[in-house]
Amino acid sequence: MKNRIKGLVLLVVATFSLFVLAACGNTQASSNKDTTVKIGVTGSDDRVLQAVAKKVKKEGINIKIVEFSDYNQPNTALQQGEIDLNAFQTVTFQNDWNKKHHTNIVSLGSTVIAPMSLFSKKITKLSQIKEGDKIAVPNDATNEGRALQLLESAGLIKLDNKKIPNLKDITENKLNLQISALDAAQTAKSLEDVTASVVNSGVANDAKLNLNKALYREKITAKSKPYVNIISANAKDKNNKVYKKIVKAYQSKDIAKVINDEYHGFESPAWNYKVLN
Figure 1 (cartoon, rainbow, N blue to C red):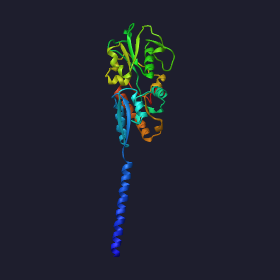
Figure 2: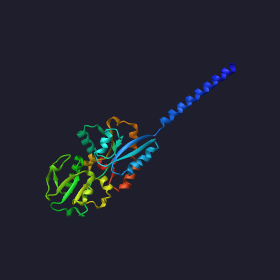
Figure 3: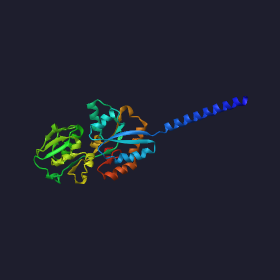
Figure 4: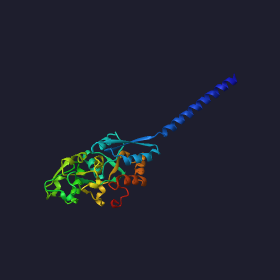
């Protein structure tokens, strides 16, 4: 009888031990489970983020890239929790968005500086722009201002001295150029209808425009710092360790090489761009 009781006790202990080991195993498996981070972008060009995704995959981080068709959607999606981060906007665009939409979106780190360019399908030189020609620029406040500053730099107009100018701030337009503001995503498509259009780098890439044939390119100086592209998050997530790992992986020598190799100087790593420091 004693032996039988002893056997039952040993069976119970063994069963309990197996249960505890299984529970511990499940906990460990759970702790090692990969983390998925959704990052919003505009357009379909995700070459750099794909390279970053491969790096952080080794740390158990899965990056899911979510594409948006215009500049309004990624911040709305971020605020509403549909995505975790976005990587499409400049410092100035983010600041303007927060002010207008009463949001608290913050930068976690810089990515690239991507000069805007003036393109045309009707002329080949800046000097060929003539009286009354039509010029298109993006219509969101920050990119419109940046595009107008490009036109001023090219010697086509003069502006009132403002950080973010708009069409009303044009003080001199000797050629009486007809400058119209369109959705940024439409600027490349407008080239059939206008003499020239100021197009963001990402939009130009999606439209397969030849950057070597641009009439004029934005100059990168210390004043370009507000136009550096960034990885953004909601303020509550600014200290998120996983997100910081993604930024660290992005701001690395091998990703800088990917940027330089893929874009041939048309986009440059902003975190180590000497002119901006």
